[in-house]
Length: 475
Image (cartoon, rainbow, N blue to C red):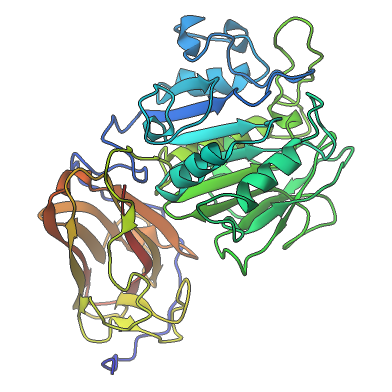
């Protein structure tokens, strides 16, 4: 039986400045399940192996493949690269934080090709027009499950640009429902068989969402010009979230842009290719400039979503991780605390079903501090990470505080793996919901390490650090 916990003060959330204290530990990064690489380099692969240039489509960042830098190594304008997605590619390239490639052959995971998915953090599927093979679907789904970011861009039903009997709606739905990894609605949504002629779908109000309010700008509206939407099924995947909706729709229907997670990875869906079209491309194509449409904020949506999927400056995301012989697995015991204190060592009352703070999923969570007086709580578990594996520690964190300061960290939660401090959070990280945190701990492969959370609270005004849905994924 779980130990009873002292009554905490009534909880109030102060949405203070999002200060984050992170050590310079070499292996702490913001991507999921990625091999060690420069923290500022987010690796994005654009697919061009499934008729993305059929008909009037020109869904490429450059005619130079796989490396767009061969066309222009330092592009300053979107016309320096040729393709209807060149604005997207050049905008990422100019930040200096991205490495971009184009895949023109079958997609693989764990192979030796330079465009193998294990070498990338995010895969972009810009309106594919041929079905993925069984092997490709396994590769894509495994990539996401192990931490990769997947950006799926559809078009309206019937947009069969190469006349092979398949359109992007059918192809992407087939990927999600007919694969060897998980065909039970893994992302929590299905793409609607619709052809919506026009509109400016509006973004929801969510100031904390990294896709709608990211480093590339604030998203207010998108553009639909013969496109479709998605139906959300949160009962299948509670992480699914509609961000942009067709006029007159909300909730689980009419989602024009949606995000979700699967395993350690992230997923984004967009219901039309018109917003990513920058109006320029190869000779002979009839293109339209949706990217710069003045009635929408499509560029910000595409770029923020890419950053979120790749983990650029966010709390987690992309990183497909290397292949090799490591068996993919989740190593933590009782990761969502639903078996009480089993496998965890925790201070009295930390693992709890108290209704004062909601669990992210299920009934149990780990609630450190929140007393409004000097107090220390700990939560830990030792785990053996096999040699030769890429490893990622992830968890969802909700910080609730009564502190009103926007500058002083009075109460702190420190996260360590072995002897290395991964991050320190504080009352300055207070937010209204759970936020995914993720760290590459591949350097601990071949060792037994203790994953530990230590919460230290000051003498007045409570701060609660609530943790749920932990994972230590290896691949």
